[in-house]
Image (cartoon, rainbow, N blue to C red; front, side, top):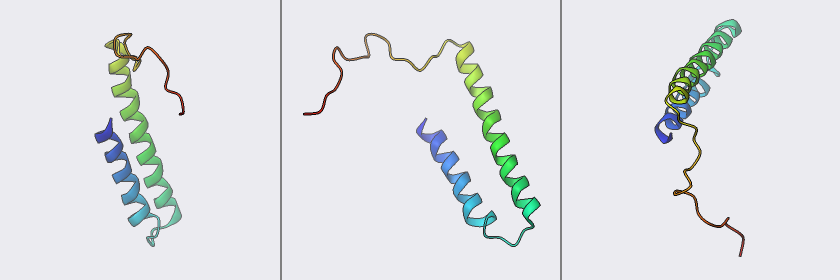
Length: 73
């Protein structure tokens, strides 16, 4: 998950650093943003669908969870 997040942050940083302040026409900058968003959604849908079909839920197993909830001291 951390590697995926690092990749998303890298791409968004590149867009913000190079595309947003560039002299490209507005339609081109919006097209790049839409393409980045559609690529991200396809990535999430494809890999998320594969994980869901494999039975992954993201929930902890009973053995992995603690017996009590954390509380503030």
